Length: 119
Image 1: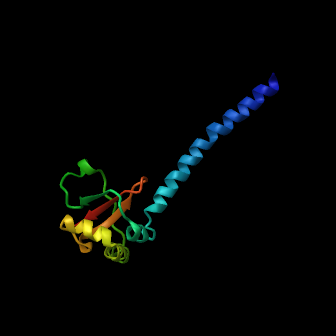
Image 2: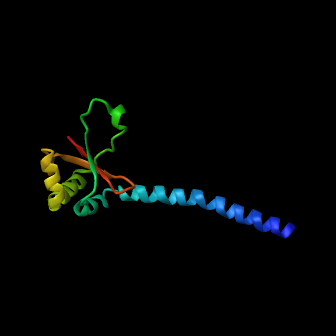
Image 3: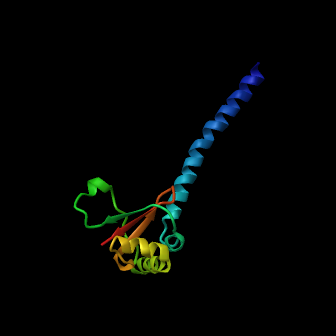
């Protein structure tokens, strides 16, 4: 009886101990997805997914939450070049009367969708 309780307690401890570790790894992977070095390749291959356009000049930040700060000029240039290389995305932006030069920054959601931030 004591042995069964000890085994049961060990299993319970092991199960509850893995959830925070998995959550921490998920958050770490999400941050890694949005590193400046990883975004251009994601933009270059982005296709047939939903995306959102958000303006940095919007008066109501309360409606859209906090906006990420753009990277360095070099990183912004790399993202714009990636947009230009993605013909599907260029066509989608054109329908919204935007060009690659209008894009200031981009971020990825966990589900793969992207948010493009404009001037």
